[in-house]
Length: 109
Image 1: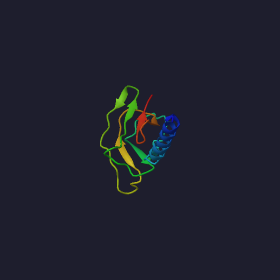
Image 2: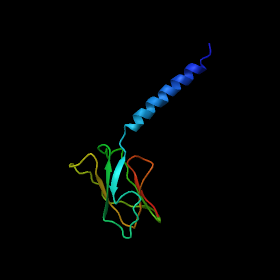
Image 3: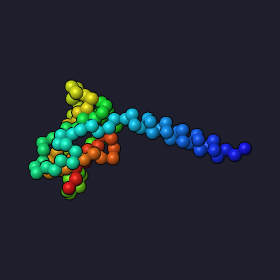
Image 4: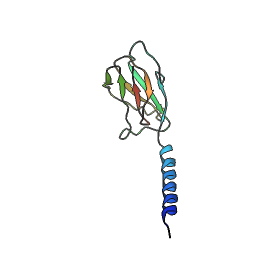
């Protein structure tokens, strides 16, 4: 008996189950300044809202400016509106963009 069809079906079922689990994770919802905002001056801070409560141990926010990655100040997660707010202090002018990781906000040129 050829096991290839069974193996293919089992692999497909596992892949679909994994895709469903991944889609249930926290994701970027909005930010202030808004995603893709072109700023003349650097803001004092960036606020980011997520679809679920952020988990600081596994969540990551990074910013990129025209000269590469920007060092961040303290990140805070207030208890009010906890479903989603993380605030970070920033320095250079920026564009806020959603990064590859769900909790990631990036700045670029």
